[in-house]
Image (spheres, rainbow, N blue to C red):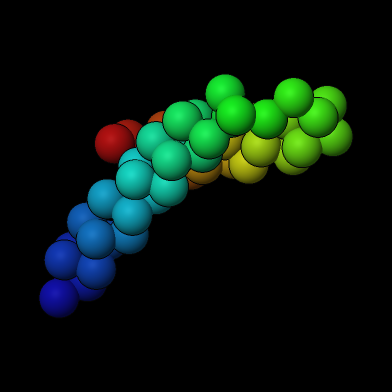
Length: 52
């Protein structure tokens, strides 16, 4: 059961990361881009830590 939940969480994180990267190209405001970049880095770190 836990393995299934972990897999779902990983898939959701990957999907969220894809959306954020795609959305990033629509923003020109530096503050918004910095926020998106920091969130992208956090998600990438979490996925890297899980080895996914």
